Image (cartoon, rainbow, N blue to C red):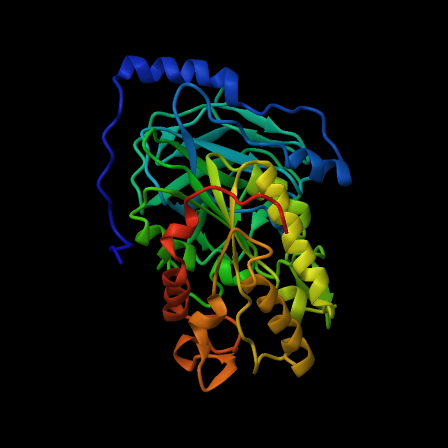
Length: 420
């Protein structure tokens, strides 16, 4: 694997300053998603699923990083007035310009950002430094001419001058970000408001979007090591593709979260079915989707006892992706014997789902995560050397095994006809 920390070489700018300046000016009118009227309830979710922006004739835009919006941040009901949010993200593909997507999906009041920057380079929105994002909406910035290196940390800073209501967040990021004001700087492992970074790259084949749960988000991996299995996949592809990691811990195919179990709130976001358009079909440059969902439908309360409902949900997602011309790769469900919710009956559901995935009747191709990490002497358990400690989630070695299990040939090619 390439070295993950420190500075990476900057990519050379692909065009002269005058050409890039023209692209910025023209691109402003094409890709800013301006919405001014707040929405509420189910209307908010519908609005936030609108595409961030299409690729256009000025160049190929491809997602280098994504972080799906999960929930309103607890204990941050008034936002962070007067503070600067410094979101640190890790890139996959590089480019010669960038644009960012900001979300106020879970907000109840307009969100004002009066200063934004990518690696200290100022960002504008329709030519202005200040932008207002209505409750339940998102906004895409103008292109900013900044070299973005592949496989490197990138900082996107945002200043919120006023109280703005609930903060749209992605918790449990396994990445250190920061909050700063006049009194100091504090570390955090949440991404706030930022949901995508796209780069302009004329040579990239496109983006691979991974929709998954905690095993995709990297629960159990080392903070700041960028050891999630989609990071491993990015390394293996030599960072030619954008990798859009849309993993949410606790996420399911069929049911929304958050769920409250035993007084503990599990923030698992909208179901994969409900967020698929927003978090997969609307990703810039999307070419292939890897679906790694289902284990929480099996093991998380309330459990789904019918494997046919789970496989029908997976098949429906495949059909929706095919309608957009995307190739679909699915992942088998990994073992979890020894975890608190395991029972023989629930394991039978998992095995039945895996049998249908392996049959070839759901996806264009599949990656056998189950086979990659199971203990050959106790196949309903994960190998001890891959276990993060809870018998469900993986350590860095386990995530390397998942990332290496993906046949690189499966992420390229054309979709099959829907003849399942």
